[in-house]
Length: 380
Ligand code: SAH
Image (tube, rainbow, N blue to C red):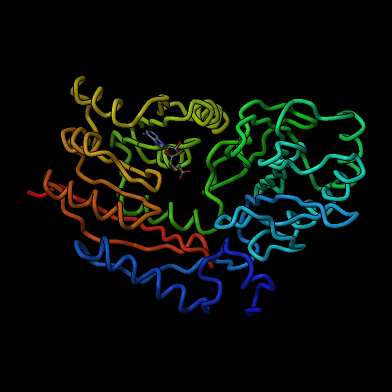
């Protein structure tokens, strides 16, 4: 057992949890020096404001133990479920909800789904919380539509978990997919939660991407905005925009924002978010960033500053080519994978951009992920 988690040796969700927090920070800073650091200066890592209870999204799985149903964590390397009554990086609210749900599922005879025998129904529960407003959503993921006694279950759920502001059921028939369901049905509430980030409101749907560490995300976005040096006259590109967080926050300081994101559900949220905040100088497009950036070059569109925030795989070279053709003065590259970030920085280097500085942020204490923001400027 380590200093903060009793399951540290058994659970492999947090790969670095046997290191002290200082050593984890040193390790992540080292990763940044090893990759983007070969091309630019790496600043000191910004530690996470909280190192336990920081996740606003918690994923739980369930298993039968004798005559009980228990909540647990999914061991990704072994495909087995480890019973755990407390996850240290999840909030107390999420831990309390999953414990209450385990009892409720058992009393309603809702049994965990087994991908081998294809028996049972319950795949997982995802608890999403809006740190700033206190809204909480439970997303109950099942194997098919046949959930029994929905009405009585909903009443019992509201009684057992009064902190929930909404609950939805999602269904995923794919044997191997445990956490995300496409079809969803609202049990009660609005089916979304609303959070506040850097002063703007954001509606979050059950499956939309949203940064999991609220307070650290605010620090990261503030740094990204500071590096962008917006004066109010810039045309900005927000590529890989998700539900529109960066673009909406930047829109107050820019003339116009082009935002692009692949997931149509996230774009629907993004449009609602712009409306919710009374912002009309932003346009969201559901498309592949690569195709969208190419279209902008064909239209000879002006882009002064670009924020790019791709998934772990990084950008495609074709996207980077179009981006360089658009010729923004500054590119702010936010990444959750310093290795692919460094690869893309090299490509941008050949296309006329200099990586100036890298700021690492610890978004995921105890887990093996490193987040970094790099500023690139056009070479003369
Ligand atoms: N900037 C957002 C989201 C970053 S996560 C935030 O900070 O909240 C990366 C996003 O890229 C995801 O929403 C994912 O759906 C999207 N994405 C993945 N591949 C893409 C592609 N080829 N083109 C556009 N968006 C893509």
